[in-house]
Image (cartoon, rainbow, N blue to C red; front, side, top):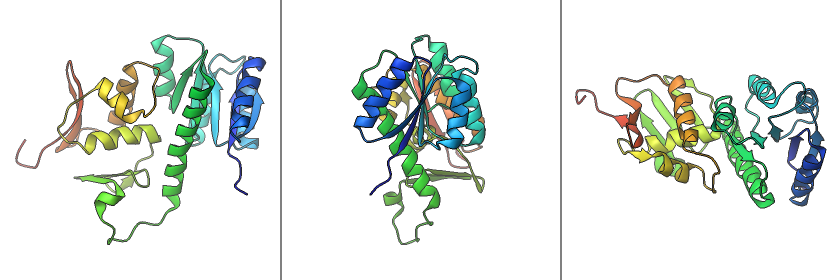
Length: 246
């Protein structure tokens, strides 16, 4: 029998936590409910969840600090929960490494869909990490690889190599990077990028794209042949030019 995926639910409102647990249990997830940040950090170690649904406003250690601690220890998928609607909250959560953000009150079907979507991306990335490098006979286009000087982005196994080093990044960040790089010199609006990268209806604003671009630029300083360029008033593009054609 296939082992159930484990979801850690962290919310100081016990009624909301229990409701989320009921929805997830109906979808055959194993859940654990905790109600503050200290319990959450302990449960991350003891329960070993596949994903964390994390409220921001928690007693003691708040959700942002819990997320920071989780990110220090690895790439465990985290979806932030909050009743607060300010753009600042969404952006800060994403900058700290959250994989997604759900506003309260939320639709149960949407919440489950987002959990499944993040788990699918995470599982694909994890499987890719342990999969041997494909043989050269496999066509590159089937492997979903884009290659530029000093850079290879592989969507098949969710890996990025830059100057012969593996670069760690969350799945959604990698998907955005791959999408832009697979359409070199083509400009996309923020709305187009949200539509292409977030495959379900994403409740947020276009600052989400800005945050992910910012995080990518922190990892990849401008190369002499390619860069993530801002097209003012429109959006972004992966700008590439051959040597001698700058």
